[in-house]
Amino acid sequence: MDTIDKDEPLITDTAINDRVARLIGRACRAQLWLLFLDERSVMLPTLMPNDELPSPLDAELAEGIASMLRQAIAGTPIESVILVWERPGGPIATTEDKQSAAALAWACADEGVPVRAQLISHDFGVRTLGAEEFTDVLDVPVL
Image 1: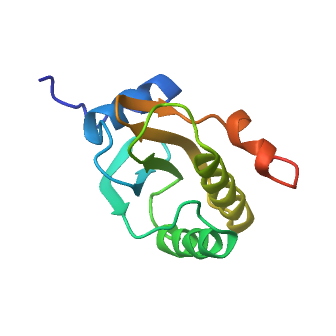
Image 2: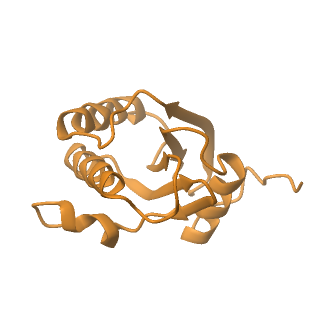
């Protein structure tokens, strides 16, 4: 297996997808992973899984996560966050995936937490979850 160049900037969606595929890979269980990028889009060496989240994520919990993220990244070299929704199943975004992604995207925007990308880790690999896939569940304009 090739080694990961930890200093390689993750500038493109493809680079992010490849890195997440190598680090997280196929889904084993339902959990949300938080990955962090610095000002050069280099991934920091901290990955945070959380497997105690309901599906779909409700607005109140999303606000709590976003608030925690805002506080956690204040004064650090973290410039943006990557959210990875690991869950068993196929690659097609479910209604629950879309609701969770929308709730957390909106909460992070409200808290000033830059989200670089959202991805789904599923039974067959990893895929980017584009904003166009989940913004229709929001009752507000997309930022």
